[in-house]
Length: 100
Image (cartoon, rainbow, N blue to C red; front, side):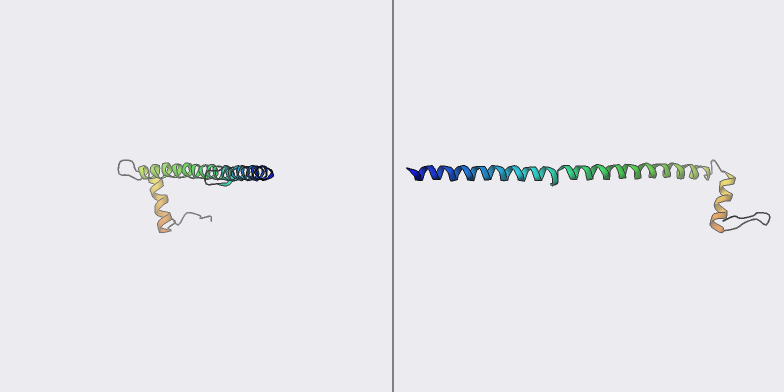
């Protein structure tokens, strides 16, 4: 009668070890897995950086649209045209002083 009781004890130990093992596996997966907490923090940081970059690019687009409009046929800003010509050609008038 001692043998069946020993098997029940071993089965309980195996069940306990299996349950603890599964618990540890799921805990590890929830923290460091593809969908875990660390990955979520990383994704949120990347999202924040990309949003910041998007905002900077949007501001740059607005600035370029403004310059494009100011150099268009409908609306010509002579000061901007002069500035762009000087930057591209590297030309200065004789009565100007250039500071770099």
